[in-house]
Image 1 (cartoon, rainbow, N blue to C red):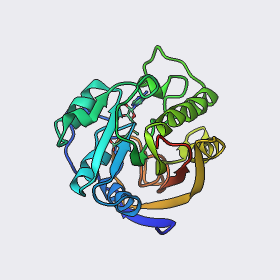
Image 2 (image 1 turned 30 degrees about the horizontal axis):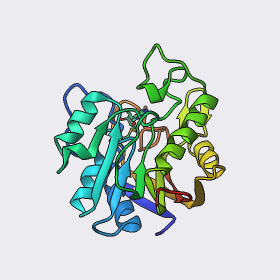
Image 3 (image 1 turned 90 degrees about the horizontal axis):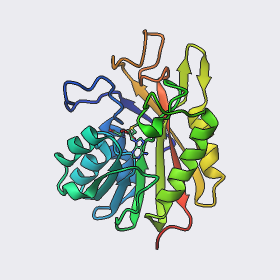
Length: 233
Ligand SMILES: C[S@@+](CC[C@H](N)C(=O)[O-])C[C@H]1O[C@@H](n2cnc3c(N)ncnc32)[C@H](O)[C@@H]1O
């Protein structure tokens, strides 16, 4: 696969009215990744399923999709849109002993820290939760090491993530997550795909026109690609 892609920023399917923070990965990226890293009939896992873009796109392309989502409303939303609602587990990735078949590819975008720093993204930004950037990176490693146990030995992990430009400066989230995962025994870093996003959308995260098209202060994001070592089979 190319190491750079240029794609339109578009999240076209409707979300429920009360949703004011569209965290979805644009389907056009998921399509390219599913096609590049899996064959029809293979299994695709998204342990941070969100509104289910990975699962719905993977199913549409003839793959078998599984996922986990901690937020009850989002889990319900996804279950209503996939062929087998039981393939989406409502639960916490850290606690779960998922009975999924070993995944050929894990394609996911974890919750980001930075916008609501101080509260824990893995606890759905619960205002009563607390975390630091360092805790967050440790949790990322813990979560993905756990997920590696649900994957086939020769599987691929693709993490969709961006650096964040804030009023206080840049959070080098993509690079820090990339390094932390590369240093584990579970994953070998294969390389990154830089995705440049054309056009802009107003989803409440982007700010003015000087900010990026993707909504995190930049007009590009990264897909970090790893070989899974020591998977489940
Ligand atoms: C960046 S969003 C994923 C968006 C998704 N790619 C899509 O297109 O809809 C990250 C998701 O991870 C979920 N999440 C956060 N902590 C979790 C946990 N501990 N276990 C499972 N899911 C979690 C959040 O609720 C959020 O929906």
